[in-house]
Length: 428
Image 1 (cartoon, rainbow, N blue to C red):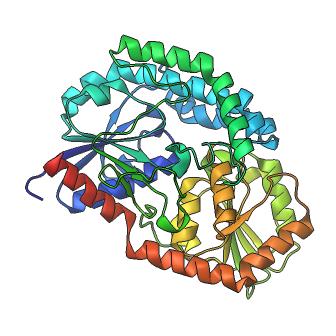
Image 2 (image 1 turned 60 degrees about the vertical axis):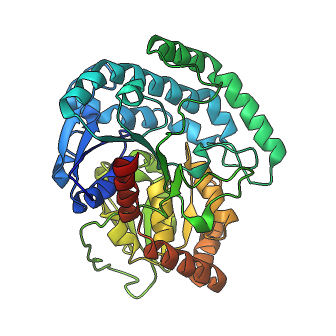
């Protein structure tokens, strides 16, 4: 590194992208650069807790801090009935409403971003989101797109469409999904293109809300599970980070009242998915009858579980990488952090997706032989028991996961990202 530069990170207002960016920012500071965060007010304090400077960008109409912090949680909880639907049947409800809200965030951000960028004066901007913020593209400094969702967010004719959760071999299904997505999203996309025109940007093709950065695009997917594309992504503009697992605080596994010598499970549906209390209670009851111990992340809903089996413990939060590194198997929702952390530590997973790219990661875990996809609601205790037994005892899967984990740990994502960003700063 030749001189200290300012790198601004602008992650989506969700803990997965936020904490990925924190890990990369820490690695950038280890190289001598200064990292700052542009943040939705609802995530205010998350980055400051790690020692980073924060600059708030309004992504919606200003509201009290408590209401802002709950916005996306309330949004997801309001859609719990739609989680029972297939990915294609979620297009005209959850997905449609989600994209409409995301477009509004881009419009609101455009009001604040130009002045904030002039004040911060970053030398490089890293955006982890699914939509273009014109002010960042127009600022006049290099910008990098971080893709912390499923790899198929960058489309290709030979891989399943983003959000579909379809098998790579279901070509007819791919076509149906693309057609319905285009139909549902058309009015929202037209509104977005009008916004782009007002900002002096060219229109995007139907269905596209972002573009490749001409400088660099960072994908979190690791090589052992990435898709075989018809058109491979060029290395000069795309870099696979082999996951981006951060170091988190240490965690000591507590004592259980039962099954202390049995395999340990970790169950988490993320900060937003914890609102599905009925499903989590059903899993707690089922695992309570099985020969395991289990740690459950139940978010803010601790009081909804007054009675627990002796082999189950709950908390509102865990330092997830530290926990996953110590367990025998994981049940999760398919969020990209959970997906890549299981791979990084070589842990088998049962993925029970509910929305967004969780569907894609669930199918990818199963088709690549690193875990199992299980319908979120249509399962029996016997089926759950059988899948867990395979996670613990399938030697071929265990060997595959050990090889994948070793590969990822030999190529740590945050350090690689920092080196790539340093190269962009030096050479453009």
